[in-house]
Length: 253
Image (cartoon, rainbow, N blue to C red; front, side, top):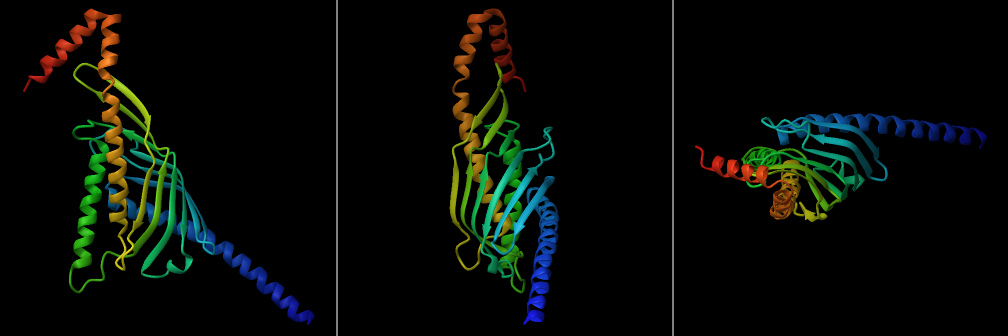
């Protein structure tokens, strides 16, 4: 009996050590996977500070995920996720479709660059993601192919407290804006047997983020007239010159 207990104790220690080792390697594998796969979707640099995984419980957290700006934009990043909590069905990880119960992102930082009514960094990234999602769909539907890789199902995706930092340029005024977006809540993504590709998931989430950002910035720009009126009261000559110069610039070819 004593020998049996000793053997069981040794086995328990080995299992614990094995679980720790697997966890460490999985963390590194996921981090490397994100940094190698994500840039192909966004066509920008993507870095991930760290990953914490618990394979047995199906919980995970990502720290410091940064999506860089596309070409033509000067800022170092477009989106930074401080932390994201993920809950996965453990038994689905090795299957063809990974079932994710929930993804929760709290207070991500969005740096907007460009024109809310024209070209901007978020729209450019979204265009890149759309192109990748379309290519994946074509691969999936092509006869004799195995599709575009692992499929996903996300039951609940929440983005809460997203902060937007932007500098808006108009013909008469430059305005820096900081605002908080309304919560973005998506449900039942990839519920069918085909699931959803990572590119399609990214497209759906980013399209909501972009639309909410542009709407919030557009609403904020409604206050520019009030700001301009205050400028006229403080320094009427300079403000009128700015208006004149700005209007004149609108008619230049």
